[in-house]
Image (cartoon, rainbow, N blue to C red; front, side, top):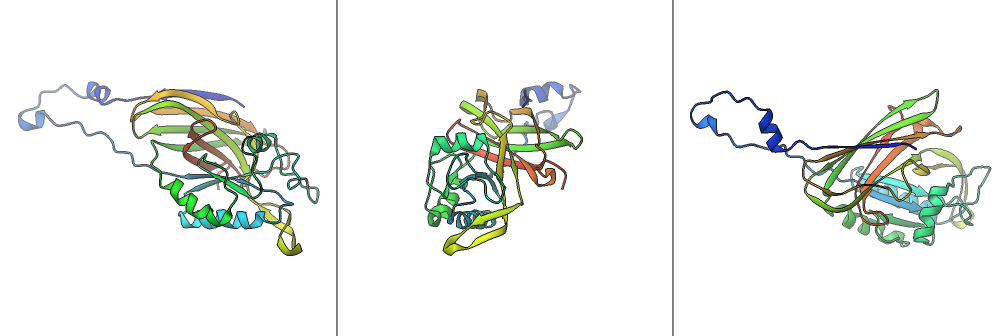
Length: 269
């Protein structure tokens, strides 16, 4: 993992300093500065605790899918399969666990299935997930996030470049967290009433953290219009399908509120 951060700030004063000083007659001489208006582009982060041996977990996955559709795709989902749990033991030779998932689970320690919306409390009542999701999604965000990836197939290394753009002044610690997830991992899954799927598609599976599991601090005071850019690198393990992998980046308070999230495919697709 490698991280590089830089700050970009172009104030209205700097823009005026770069403007021409030619003489202008009449009313045109005093034109008010009109700053660029950047609208909020909010995505909801859902961290779902799940396992192949959890018979109720397919219902959790279906609920997250329904929430994603209801919010017009404005959802970034991460599925947590912790190590050493009775519901996440390898099944049919497939192991979806990782140390990052274990660390996240050990912090929340919920029953399965459970979901955390934008860094809130773990919720184990799937019937209430939709309402909690909408409420979290409707919270205003002070920032936008974008992510662009480059991938080297020979080394299996992805370089993720993220940009955090502040929509308003912000004071307080802020961390950026980056994960790698994989979709469409075909394997087994237990379900209710003794149903056993042999070709279940596991999606949003957390494979590892590009940053620290709880994020990397990028500062504690920012102004509207400021941009923070950074880079992370990660090498995909053999067997992971690059075309099915995504880099997830979110910004917020470490072990707390998530203000915004974004995901981008490792490869162009």
